[in-house]
Length: 389
Image (cartoon, rainbow, N blue to C red; front, top):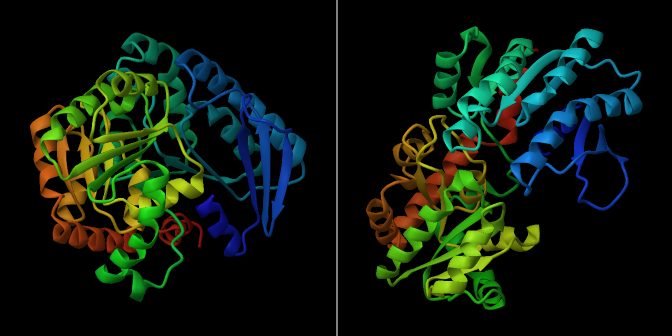
């Protein structure tokens, strides 16, 4: 939505189709704002459900979205269609609108499916090829431009597909940043502003105020390799200054809950999701933001939760497969530490290093600078629109 608001603020008229899942209350509706018409389209459940239900919902999504376009925007002649993966099933929608209106098409490639599901055993290779590979190829074919999350994503896409390299580029996840840059770039200002909320919020969620707080927030599913996270938290009990907060929900949340119930770890607070306002505050007052990805991934995932950590000026602790470049980018630009997600010892070593407050402040300040230079919606807007000016 930050990127869509940026388009609207630049004077473009923006029409948006967004899912209203079956499990959500409310009726299908159109929400209007200056230069924006947002349709909440009734769909099946897409998040936080089993793979079978999610798969069926995604396969039905194209017809539901297309019906919404015809119903709510029957006279609109679109100039540009922006769409993201997942899911890949939107190819039909994009192709039909492109054919009828002559619109240009730009794919924001967030995930590379179905290979990501194959990597962690959700899909068998033959199933991926038979059911989804042709749809994936079609999506790339109808896209005039493809924006990838990172350089490694560009390289992977070109290596494994027959795509014109001229239409593939880096156009990463981005957010709106509305702050006084001169204040935000001061390490002292960051530290002082974060301390204001810390005691109140930590008391509310029973988090110790005298520890270095390592936060993970987001999906808790198979891509995060929850058993590995559990093993890391167990072994990290040797680092007395470190305390972990895991906040989120997903298909594997139960494994973490069972671990807490059985072992009662003294270095962990587990929270099953939070109101957005409280989560944003929690990021702001934590000391380190964590990113986990299963070591089996062959595709270079680039999780968007990185941005919320960088925005609040906290360093990142990246624990991923060897194919993604998110850890290399963090280390090369000196805003985080990285290890592979099959090496508990390296994770513990990085945890120990990040108990150093001076190191955290330096990395956090560097991360905020990197965010302003690379991950703002204004930067994404410029990347997309340079093809059409």
